[in-house]
Image (cartoon, rainbow, N blue to C red; front, side):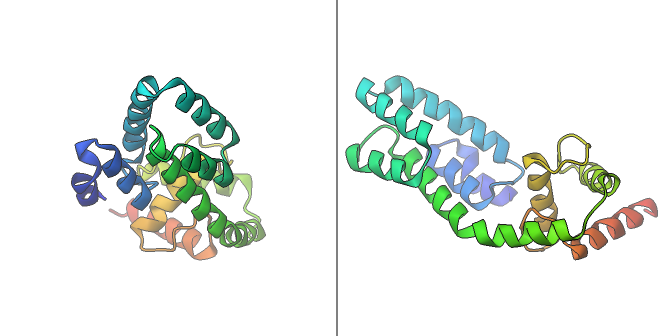
Amino acid sequence: DLNYWDQTGAAGDEAGLRAYLDRYPDGEYAELAAERLAVIQDRKRARAGRADRQLWDQVVALNTADAYRVYLERAPNGSFREEAQARLANLQQKNQNAEANAQHARAEAAMNLSPRTRQLVESRLKGLGLRPGAIDGVFDDDTRRAIRRYQASRNMNETGYLSEAMVVQLMADTVRSIFQ
């Protein structure tokens, strides 16, 4: 993660930041990269022509693959071209992963974890510095991101959903940390 950040995102250019986020959407520097991209987009918006800004605002409000394709057709050299391409690629990737994610979600739900167990998972993720958000037993976007980070650190399939194997590994890590 750090090496790739140094090679791509650390310079702060749009292409490098996007490359980093494409490879490490939940990486250590993902939030920083997203913040820097937002600043770049704000600058582009300020420089863009009125018609380009209006079209872009309409496209973003729709936030669909078709809308981004329309923007790219109508404004092939528009100020938001790279952003449109990145968002289009992201939406296409999400669509491809939707069924796999649904399977992982069903498997997690089948474990029927109690609210207390869910809080323990969040607490352990927080203890590992993975920033799961509030320790409330609700697996929101922050929790899913923390789960993916944990999975990546253990060379597990990065689904963002718990499996029995992951819960066992997480609890074993907790026990090991007590004896260290």
